[in-house]
Length: 378
Image 1 (cartoon, helix red, strand yellow):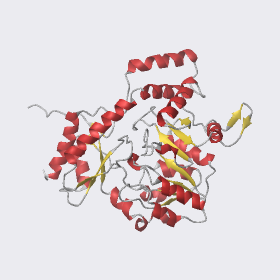
Image 2 (cartoon, rainbow, N blue to C red):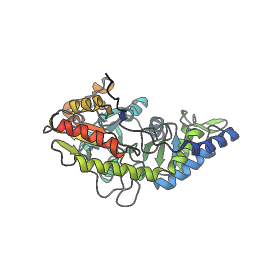
Image 3 (cartoon, one colour):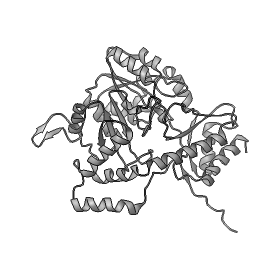
């Protein structure tokens, strides 16, 4: 009796990896120079190339995006309370907590799943000093309305832009240009990665200088420390990898778009499955493929999740549970479920299917077939 053939696992994402042989010359230069970190030549070059690619002027690289967000809050001297979303990865709220700032959760828009501007304004108190919105799944927040609110009440705005690499709005501007600062993630799971990594995009050279001091322990020169900095520097191996990645990013984005299109064609008319709409007037980067399992579907979201796992397809419930439901934040007044009905409902419906540049059609068909079997109740 032969054992059943094991099928290879399909994970929700795979990192973009350029040819290894093309990375070796970069490593050789690092070995020859013996400069591994501290604003080396690859670090400087990557900042310059990313600024050009992203259409921004001032960018500061970090070892990871969480350190970047923690430092951004320090650089802007944000205190007190900051309004943010419960529908995100927990790092966005953790960065506030590490700075001694109280997160204030408000509900999300039912279409974009980003912070609802109407709920932002209603949550402002005398202790509010900032807004930390997240461009969820790369869909831009209501940036103009958030800017109006911030200007009216004198608030800082820091965007968690981890999902928005390469995004542009219909006016041709990068989504990273909005707010006082935007934070990018270059984690292995992201559209563009440097193994781990991140960046702060800010508005002027003076602010960038302060950020660069703070990410290097606060040193302004050999004998001067201007503030309680942190070690947030990106090293030369990460930066070199990022430079090589940039050569392949346009092709990777095109492949992601094709995967997205095939999913939409296969699942777009499936009763009980709702797809997340992409605004027609943006240059999108296809970072995730979320579906929402509604009441009309044959099985629940969690049952579909388990059926996929039983077939070695590792979809993820991004984002479930809500940040506000974790024990560390559950006690906050703003975490009450009655305060967040839209986010709570969405978190129990969402399921992100695998998407990455090398997801071939045969593998994608296997994912779709599993969803279709569940739709038929098989």
